Image 1 (spheres, helix red, strand yellow):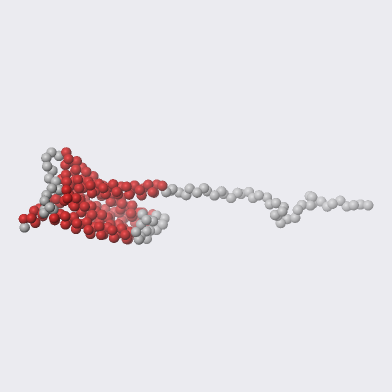
Image 2 (image 1 turned 180 degrees about the horizontal axis):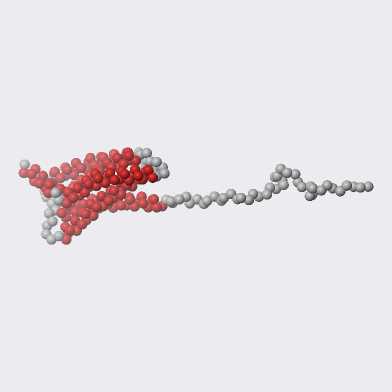
Length: 237
C-alpha cells in the first residue's frame, strides 16, 4: 500500500511540475488552433484555379495525425523524464506504464492516418499539409523553446530545483529534435515552391506578318503578261 502511495505521489509531483505546462500547451494548440486552420484551408482551396475535392477528408486525417504526434511527444517526454530522474525502479513503475499507454495508441493512430493520407491527393494539393506542418512547427517550437529556457534556469539556479532540470532536459531532447525535423521539412517545401517558375518561360511565338509575299507567276492561277497588252505588227506586202 505504501509503495502504491509513493508511486502515485511521485506521478502527481511530476505532472504538477513543468511537464504540466507542456501538456496544457499541447492540448490548447491541438483543440483550438485547427478550427482556424479549417477556415484558411477552405478559403485557399476556393481561390486556387484547380478545385480540390478532398479538403475535408485530408483535414480530418491531418487533425488526428497531429493529435497523435503531440500525444506521442508528451509520452516520450514522460518516458525520458522517468528514465533520467532520480528514484528507485519501484517508484517508476506507474510513470512507465502511463508513458507507454500514451506512446502505443499515439503511434498506431499516427501510422494509420499517415498511410491513409498517401491514398489522397495530398501530394498534388499540399495546402492542408502545409498548414498543419506550420502548425506543428509552431506548437513544437514553443514547447521546445520553453523547455530550453527552463533548462538554463535550472542550470544557473542556486540549490536544488526539485527535478525541473530533468524535466527541462527531457523536453529539450524530445521537442528539440522534433523542432529540428519539422523545421527541416518545412524549409524543404518552401524551397521547392521557390524553385518552380511563377510563369511560363517558353519564348513567345512570333506574331503573323501583316504583309503577304507576292505570289510568283509559276504558282499563281493567272496567265503570263503579253508584253504590255499590244498586238504584234501586221506584215504589209
